[in-house]
Length: 628
Image (cartoon, rainbow, N blue to C red; front, side, top):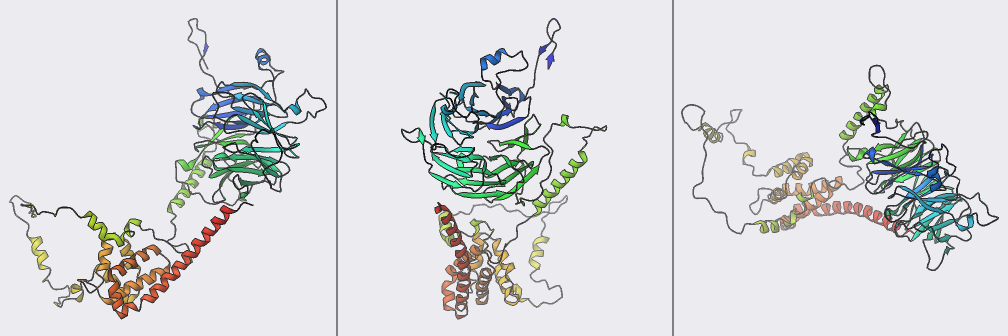
């Protein structure tokens, strides 16, 4: 964009936009803020794209065998010193300010170049092992670098080669530090490298299907001859990706499957199947809960690692060549074949309610358009996008799915074979046995004093004259002597019944044997009211209950144990009942005969719960101690 504001009417450059001249080959987020993406393109350039403002975009230049000579060739269309495109690179932020923090390998070359993120330029180092340098004769120069890995400290870069060699260099000085394997680490192509956070371990994967674990370094030794352990995956390895904080390595295999290996136990912990093409790239979410993979079948899949389920997938029109997820988890960046831009996909789970449900890995993935700006959309004569009808249909479907998800309620009991705990707040039943202590602690230090002149209020009649409304008081008093609606003056027995509301529900259950109403009523009460209702079940000690009502309470507890629902509530209610009326139950034969039934129901429910707990503890203990 040019602006014509010079004194002579001339123009000056005001603003410009630039990007890759060819599609990107590899993209990676750099830094913990999630604002910058480093991208390598088929035009042999390395660029930094900002997700906040386009004015922060910059170029690190194009890869060159001789940077000084390339600067003199600016005016020429072709640079004879230009290197092949970057196939893969890796970055670290630990030593950004001190020295080069980006290492890149080029297609078909044995050389590995270094780049400085802080200085925004290509570094001076070209890392080549001494065995593959041109100084020595009778060497096979067809060897090329196939993968690399930067250590977490930012000091070392480990490079794998097509000959099976694995070499480690100091990225600051370019000095060779160590070799792995004798004479080589693998007998086939090195397809992936990974290291841990503490520089204790190096993992190598090759086309021979072997995953080898090596010591990162050995004292006073430049050759680590033997690996610590070797894991045979029975299929050639395509690539390796790691999540260092969780010590997990993702290995993609040639049979289109993905396996996760734990670095601590060195065993396969997860296996994902579902792709129909060679896996091109993979990345972890920042919390290591999701694994995102893409393959040559043009499908991007999101796997939930803890549950081993496929939770999302979508298909694009152009194959995804590289993907990376933001360190903050808000965006997924993808690069595609024949597309010179980088696409950003928003994580909907951060700003809306998303129900993550397991999908079938072999199910058909929906086709999604690549993200575009509104000004880039093709429009018809009416001014609306051509595919507006399709988008409206998709929006309607999404709204319908959201309504389905919002209306879904979990059943109160998944299975009658399981013990179901209560959904009542723990504060309503946990302290039932300690209410006396709580009331004693909350008792005021000084007794409440009656005020000398307490105000009182009487209702008045609306009108000009000031008069009190005494009809309400007279009406309330007259209801006691008013005859029933049928004209009878016989007093109903319910009017002289002193049972509490909970006691009346239990009394009604003597005939109906339905305890659900009594249970629901008790679950709605607070701790003090529960204690009051249970205390008044007895006919003794100023209680308003009866022995049959107390018997129905015990039968209600047996019913709750038999239904295997509200297990901890039944235990708490029974403990409070026995604490308040234990002596009455023991002295009364009618009530004591119900105790064996209560004990049997409680024992049956606890045995089921104990078996499930011991089974789960056994499985966890076995997995924790399993090392082979």
